Image (cartoon, rainbow, N blue to C red; front, side, top):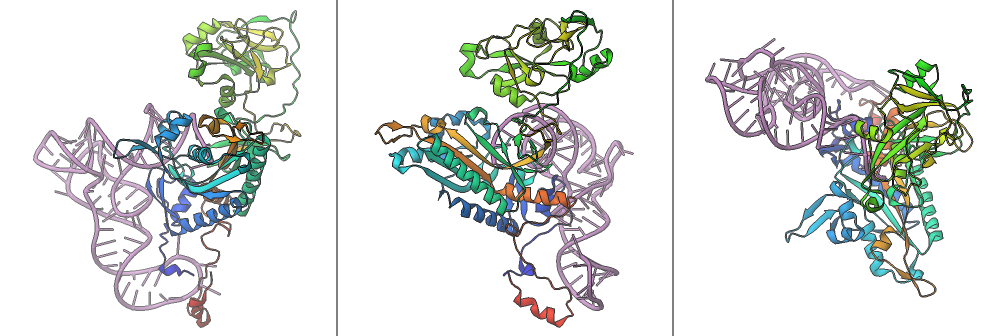
Length: 515
RNA sequence: CGGGGCGUAGCGCAGCCUGGUAGCGCAUCUGCUUUGGGAGCAGAGGGCCGGGGGUUCGAAUCCCUCCGCCCCGACCA
């Protein structure tokens, strides 16, 4: 039992001006945390109690599937060189030198260290599967720490790693984590949602993020009543069928004079055609990764055709094009299209025959598949074309889903309306594959006495994010100025307060309060 | 890193434009009163005005520079 009057709980009537999001203000005001620097926070008594309770829940559930380790936060350069991430992590990694001048870094994640242990110790398939986890402080020199505890440079993560003999084993380890995570978040009282995530350049076969809807979040996710849920970078939707325009003239592409009509809106108004009957042309340059330089060159033009009222999802496009995307300069546009922006379209653009072959990568968004008689730029100043029909009048390098879905569109499972909203990621489970076990040379002997590379998974939970997202959710339901935590993660479950000091009975209770 | 903003008492702010060495609310401390919903009255303490340099008789106020923090964009727990 603690006596409030003797505790250090520095509450604030007013939130410091630096605090923007609700959880940040409230954590400060309730005396849970204090800021030390950008993205660096001290957890005071109350904050630490909550964190400890969350950690206890995480540990309890994780002990059901794995074994707890504690790895060093201070890592020598060598292991990170082996995986290639000493270079990849760039500025995000805190680096330092020891007195002898040797390079060290502060761990941002621990695939390398875990794999080095696995490599040194695991010899036989009989030792697999293994699930090793830890609850430890991570360091990341974020480009922009923000929103209080939501995005910081030092935070507590539960990170777990699985080693299996084959994919079936990985599936099992992955599913165990999926289950454990759901239990953990439920016990913490969170209203969470599991979404399909972009596995990105890491090249894993599956990846799931656990998200909590909140405006303070940085991700956009879509979900529907059917149970479908996905990160916007992955989300697809069912579109209502559109009855195409009737062809004009002979039904073949027909030039229309459209002086000074450049945007979708302008052309639409000018020709009295809604945006969904138009083709939007987007022009990018992909700065390709070094591995592709020999084959595809340093950069390649990427041209995308979208439905007029749709917007491009750069993450989806980036996954297809590879490399970093940037918009074309006016000069580059003229080079590729032979026309200035405002009149761009498919005709005359030379598509690469295959995504892996050099040349302009031309992508037709799936939403335009099967459409006919669309309006598009003519690649000729002051002209557009009617009757444009994809695949008949032009062929892209490939057809792909590269658009952003919109709120209310039908979900791909049963067509029920999609809810789109910002969310915070509280956990992520990820089928890693062989990336680290291979690059770092981990292997075990299989049943046949042959050396095989174990397959890995990695799984993370942001401890503080459980706290912050819980507060964000509660604050949102209370007008932003108040919150309540689930007893499982609240610093205290019961506070006894005397409301009438004159009442002898209650005054006498002072010393007998319970936890 | 690019763009925007801020840095004056523990917290929230005013003063800066139109230089004359600092003020308000809350909090804190003392005393008295009060006591069923974050008390009232009276009094008190507390400020390197982010750091350094410059202009000036004189700088919180003007100029230069550095530092820090927040917000908007590329990352991820």
